[in-house]
Image (cartoon, rainbow, N blue to C red; front, side, top):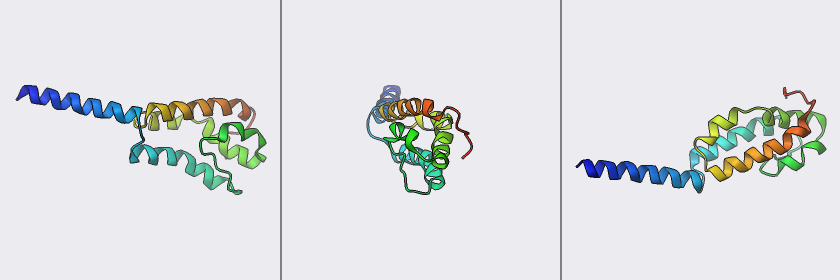
Length: 111
């Protein structure tokens, strides 16, 4: 009986690890969407931050740049999403945030 319990615990750990390395769960998708939603609501022209926003921040109008930079300069998503999303997704998003940060220098973090 004890061996079965240990095997079950190891199986759950393996599945959890595989999920973190692979495809996002619904919970992860919801978390990532919650990062984008406030920005999308703030931006009026339909600009989408998606996963390609990092190279576009500097070309945005001032008001829209404030929206994006407010999110980029915030670290709330790190703790919220990194613990439930695949590592490859959060690492990629983190790198894009880091790329965008210099473009937010001098921009108010308040949208």
